[in-house]
Image 1 (cartoon, one colour):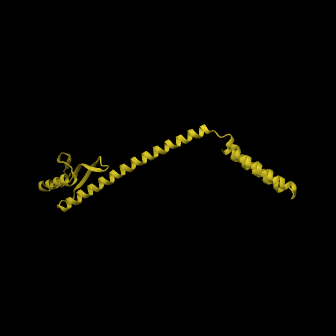
Image 2 (image 1 turned 180 degrees about the horizontal axis):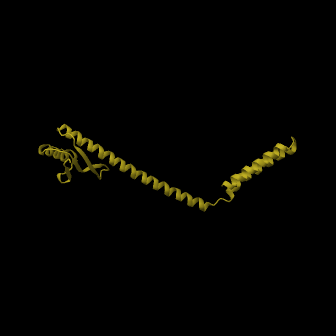
Length: 159
């Protein structure tokens, strides 16, 4: 394609020079028509040698790359969506803990993909110092409000 473009530029310069040097007469009008025809043929010439097999192959490669990019973008979107939802659940647990009078608690919530098409809480990792009654209240809140059973609630003491 770049060769065809170079040929078109060279031909345009040559035709422009010849039109500039030709005196105003009937010959110049004929030369103008001839130049336009030659430039038109020069533009159409690459299409004569067009390789449709290569074009089809490149189009197929382009479609495959498009599908790959689309698939990777969708996966990245789901990962970001999951991270955002996990952060929201963790913030919710920390807010509820503060409402129960527990401060300095760090919560991490793991989610899993549900059949409904949503990320739902699966497990919790709670770090911080809590006494027995506060822990019981938080365990109940995690079980009742988020649906995380006691066997998937992991508690870690500070320090």
